[in-house]
Amino acid sequence: MKKFLFQYPLAASIVLTEAAGTLGIFFYTLIRDFVRGSVSDLSAEPVMAAIPAAALISALLFYPLVLTICEAVFLFLEARKRHVEAAWHFDQAAIWYGLFLEVLYAALMKEITGADWQVQLSNGETHTPIYSAAAPTIIVIFLLALAGYYYLSFQPMEKMPPLLIVLSMSAMYLGMTGLIVFTVQIMGREREDLILLIYPICIALVIARTILRKVHAWPELPMEKRRIRENAFLQRIDHLLSDSGFWPIYALLLMLPLLGILIAVLVLFGQAPDSIVKAWTETSDWALSAKEAPQNIYYDEHYLCTVAAGGHRNVVKPIRKGVRHGHVVIVNRQLCVANAFEQLLEERTPRLHRALRAFYDRYGFPIARLIRSKWAADFVYFLMKPLEWLFVAFLYLVEVHPENRIAVQYMGKLPEYKKQLPALHGTREIGIKIREPL
Image (tube, rainbow, N blue to C red; front, side, top):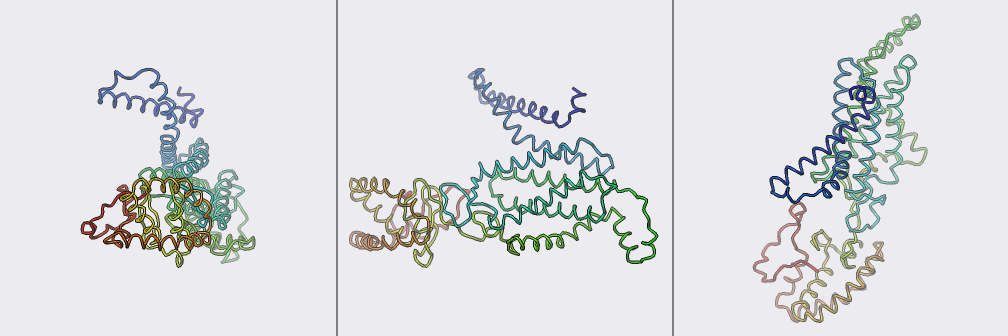
């Protein structure tokens, strides 16, 4: 076991994490069921079925934590000039397995699609966190950071010019900055999103140790310095670059010039000069987003909700946000009037309401799926105007306070963590029961 641990440390870390994580989850389940008094109900079949799930949890959650701890230990040892050869293998696991988990979390938990903010999505789907037109700039920055890392990792120290070492460090700094911005972009307020912090922390430890190793490994190479001594400027430059302790600081100072050169080159290939900013702001649904996307179409949605959210603001005239079936919708007067009319039908003529509701459920969602542009939403808005006037006339004919009924539509309750709407003042005096909107 000891031989396996020292000969194959990465494989050993995987095996031990899987074994410890699986056993830990298994015994936790037993103890929990024992406390609840349901251990006697356990049989071999559910226990065996739980083992693969425990192994999966260990791989997805525990092993990234183990990698981060290992990287922290390697950095501590490097600071004491005790280099660990196996650390490079852990670096590869941290970079590539961590990237895989990051993409997996974004796809499954965040439901990220490749669509830009202008595209209307459905249900819980979210738009791309990186504007597609500016994505090449971000991709090139990350590729440059990887190139800098692998250059410092593979190139023999004797063949590395000091200035190229510093530029490679600057490239890694740029990549780390991009990763931090990406993490800030996609992190939400959910507790589960804290797992997104593991990857940037792990990569920061990898970069710090890689830089520290080069600082420690820089030798005083024999070279002809007669001409350097004869030139005061060259002598000063040589003195600055030969002191490897200042390389990380020089790399920090060269970040912006390197970024400027990179942007200038990318402009020649069609990228905008401000692509590095637009990549994050020309998006919707995220922390740094500056755009408001069309409201998602929900599978139980109806087309008036789509019109209120998807049309031109000066046409459909959205007035506030509301709540429908537990999710936030954008509300305009036409939508409130239609729902108030339906509510009145449900109270006064339930049989007629059921027939109309069935017809609406059958044709409303297919119509909503056809509304894929602002112009289509505007067209439906104007098409519905005569019916809206008819609904208003009917409400004013049979309702004592028609505007009060219209005003309280879509004021349902949200879950605690989604509360975004101000309370409606004076609802008790209105005398209308606020219910979940249809």
